[in-house]
Image (spheres, rainbow, N blue to C red):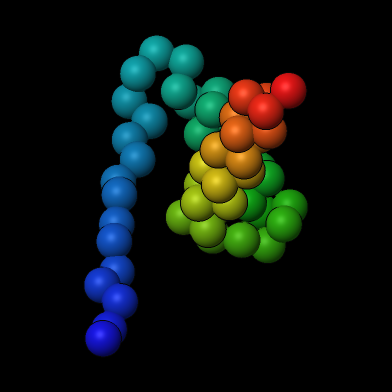
Length: 56
């Protein structure tokens, strides 16, 4: 069985999103990741942090 790739699109179109975009872009460059890879990493990291916070 093959795994189907899944995809999301992120839009930085709301007020203040330019600051968030720049932060993600800067981290991506610093860690030599694409914006998509960085967003995926940050989402996974945030979910894990929430799980750990709920346990305490």
